[in-house]
Image (cartoon, rainbow, N blue to C red; front, side, top):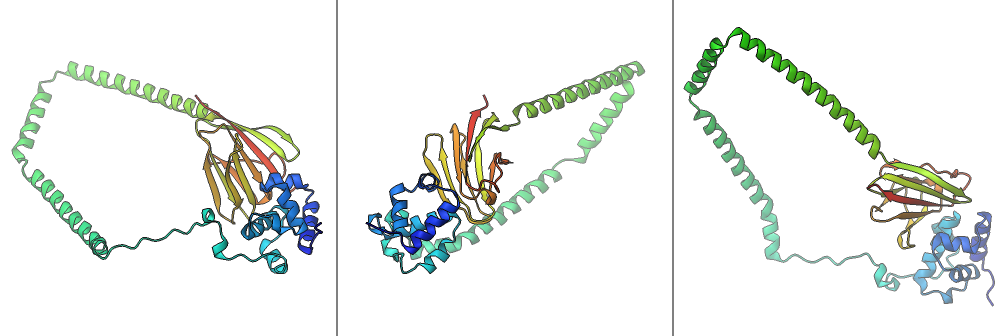
Length: 301
């Protein structure tokens, strides 16, 4: 039998103050309910490892609006410590740096100088070709063309000149008509292909939107604070989960998906963009901080 520890009692009070059940918290954090109960009861022996204890507590804090660093400092006697060697191998993002052989490093150092030399030689050759080409054209060709044009102009009759001017005017009118029609067609295409993002339904903390009249679906979630966010596709596959730091964002391409599901812990600190268009919450973020936003995508044909 385990009883609530001081830390567990603090977390449970914060959860209940948010109006969240253990099932709600499980859906929000994707942490199994039995682990959430273990955290509140201080039963850390049931966890997969010490690292997961701290990780789960951190996610619990963020979901109920507590500062995890402050909680770890205040209850450090209750939370097991973690060392770097205890981190799961799959969670480590550190990559070993390959040393460059001495011979290769010299080549790398010389590479910028070689590229600059090649560029200078290329520019010099180009200038020489252009100058030679201009100098090779005799002035007599220009004068001969001028004389021919003058002679032809004198031989044209007045009637021919009038017909030519009339044809030019007609051609200009046709060009203007064609240009106007093209502009109208372009405007029609723009109106036709403009995407539509509209609310379909709203219930409690859940809201559903429909995206159509576009063949792309690029989702961007931006943080104005430090909200916890979980992003799944329509089949329930988790594509992102964690805290997004202030002024940072998470981008995912859903073009080949039919649906995107976004769990937001602090909606008032979170902005959602669809193909660059800001999504307006159908539920006020100040009234409902925790929201589940679903976007259904119908690709334009």
